Structure formats: C-alpha cells, structure tokens
Image 1 (cartoon, rainbow, N blue to C red):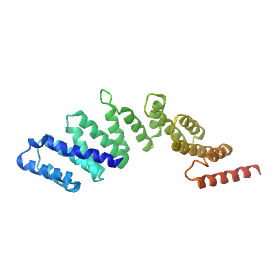
Image 2: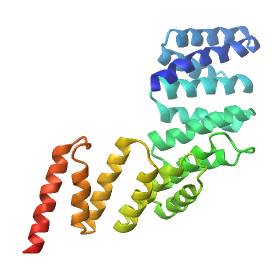
Image 3: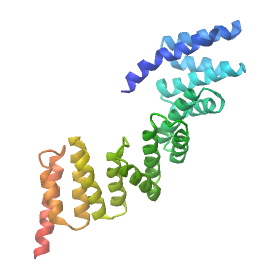
Image 4: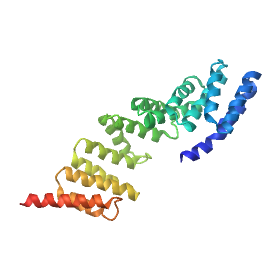
Length: 266
C-alpha cells in the first residue's frame, strides 16, 4: 500500500514545481530545476539537500511555502524521516492560505504523531483541529475515531471510553462496529472481565472478518479465564482449534484449563 502511495505522489512533486517555476528569478529557477531533476531520478536525498539550501536563500513567501511542502512530502514519503517532515507540514498549516493544503498537512501531522512519534497529545490536537473545519470534512469520522484511539494509546481510558461509547451508539459512523472492540479492550485492561466479554460479544455479532472474529474470541476466552469462568473459557478455546493460526497454543491453554478444573474438584 505504501508503494502505491509513493507512485501516486511522485508526479505531484514535479507538477507543483512546474506550476510556479516561472515566478522565480533565473538563479533560483535553476536550483529548482536541479531539485526537480533529483526528484525525477528518485535521488530524494539530493533533492532534499537542494531544497534545504534553497530555503536558506530566503525566497518569497509563496515560493518558500511550496518548497516546505516538497520537503515535507520527500521526508514523509521517500526518506522514511517522518518526524523531520513535521516542521515543514507545520509551516504549511501556519502559512498556506489554501484550506486543502492545510487539511493535507494536518492529516500528515496527525499520522506522524500517532504512528511514528507516538506523541498522542499532538495527534489529538491535530485530529481535533481537523474536526473543527466547516463544513464537516469527508474524513471526519476517521478523525473522530483517531482521537479516541489516541486517548486510548495515551492511557487516558476514561476519555477514550466516552468517545468510543458515542461512536458505538451512532450506527451511521463508519467506525461504529470497531468502537465495540475498543470498549471491550478498555474494560479488559480495567480487569472488568464480564463487561469486557459483553462488549466483545456485541462486537463479533457485527464484525464480518473471520480473522478478527477469531482474535476477539481468543480475548473473550482470556477474559473468562481471568474471571475464573473456566468452563466458559474452555469452550471458547475449544471452538478456536480449527481456526486459530497457532493451534498448539490453544491446545496448551485447553490442557492447562482442564488441569485447573480437575484440581478444583479434588
């Protein structure tokens, strides 16, 4: 998926340069063309070096803004230096008057903070800013869910649960089903075993993907086992023997549960 994204973005990098190259002085224009050649030949390190050098020449605001965008995209997409891209995306948010570029940059800021920096307060801030756009953006449900996920990953479980509960109640929300899974996970972490099972049972009634259902049933069995409901745990584990990717582990669980149940009867 990442490779397809790169292929899609490559023409954009070149096209943006061509769209404003005629506005440059001849010297700056030559440098831009050098950077463009590096992009076309996929020498992204040299392209980044050239753009960074161009920024030091203090070009006009329009040119500077576009260069920041090129650098952000190169670091994010091609050089695997996502955190280095942050400063450039932030410049776009603060200086570009085009809401579309602001939205794209905020999405990247949120993604970098959530997936790479693990800076969840910053991902909450970025996704929250996207939710404030009017009219409501097309991906607003996604941003809404990512705010809840960010609270969850930041161990702010009460805030996360409040948001997941709202999403679970909204059958029109694109993440309506997945919210039940996280509600169960929160209760599992809180050692509220019965409540976790109840949410996960609600989840698998709605979920269609077999591999995810198997994963969730394993968690249900684990919750039963943690709550000392050994018979229920045994039955769920047994139902997974044919579908779980690690049947040897399931057999070990079944053996351990059987021994515990026998010991109880002694």
